[in-house]
Length: 81
Image (cartoon, rainbow, N blue to C red; front, side, top):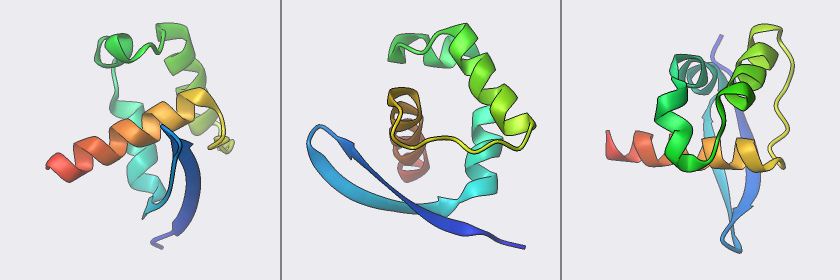
């Protein structure tokens, strides 16, 4: 079952809506390493907490700073590939 949902968030005072497959996004987060996000300001412990939430089936709040950064990074990497 392919599930799509829309998340709206603000980055640099620009509002935009992104649509993506949630399972692909979750798998992308689970594959991240702390060294990949160190320059983005996301700590090892924070990444662990996000991965823990995903593994236990909890939802991520798209309004938090960390999720906004991850969504922007996901969007940038998917557009480049």
